[in-house]
Image 1 (spheres, rainbow, N blue to C red):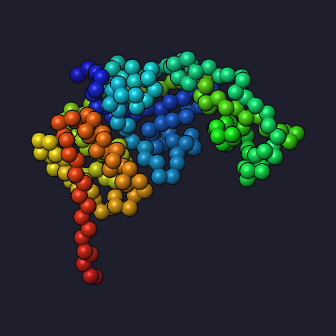
Image 2 (tube, rainbow, N blue to C red):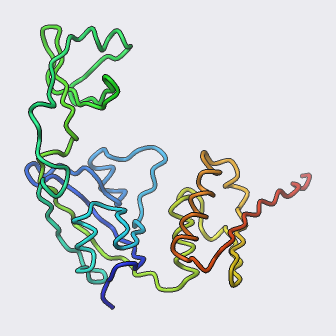
Image 3 (cartoon, one colour):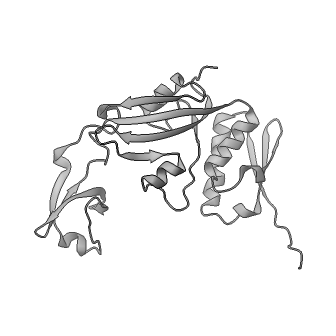
Length: 231
């Protein structure tokens, strides 16, 4: 079936800079390890996208409708449709001491905050540092290799996917969903009680579900603490 706006899909992708071949984002764990992109606690798995919602770059979002199941498509995004052209006026030289006085020991390529803005350290020498306030991918042509893994069809599967999007570190099968006409009751597994930002995740889950399923007017969260049996 063709992909259209509002569809729930799972995609795998690897994104790289056309000019250099450098990979800057991926959903594949092995690729992340090989390119040293992997971060502790990061979950690498197919990414949930609701087509047309702006959850990815707009040009990529607009091309999702061309995807075919299990096939990899190559999508090229020019700078003007990605992060814009590189602006030379956003590059500044500053005295090194202005960073070291803030407790920052800069290294080439390091991202630092200066005057309330993020910048990349480009050049160091003679007691001075060149800071580039352009987005790191400004002026770059981006290549996305995207595979449509699955189109999610049923209401329950879509709700489960929205929940997993907010709590990726917890096995979705351990959540219990009970859906009536206007109410969703979600029982949260005990292992999720102590994850960082649980309350924000719950708020996000409720907002997502009520956005995409306006017939659900109430989302209830149940947390059950069971007494552990003595050994």
